[in-house]
Image (cartoon, rainbow, N blue to C red):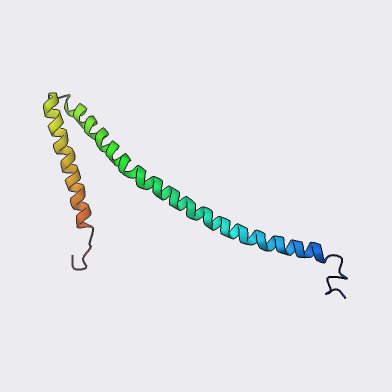
Amino acid sequence: MPGNPLTDPNWAPDLADTIDRFVGKIRTTVTDRAVVAVRAVVFGIVILIAAPVTFALMLILSTRFLQRLIAIGTDHDSSVWLSYVVLGGVMVAAGSFLMRTRYQSDDA
């Protein structure tokens, strides 16, 4: 009788293979999802920390570069306040653009 495990000589390896496939499939599915979730959390935290730092450093770099560029034609004191005015104007323009595009009305 092939359905009886006591008389089937291959029932132990077949059962072990079935359990191994089942456990391997579950482990792979759970592990892959856990890895994706952990990577998303880690990369999200890194981006949340790195983005403001990068923005601040780029703002400082652009201010210093603009001061050096303006200092070619003027003195140091004038180049400092002119660079502040130029970058302030750029940031106000960018902020105005972003505020305008924040809510798009249907009638405009």
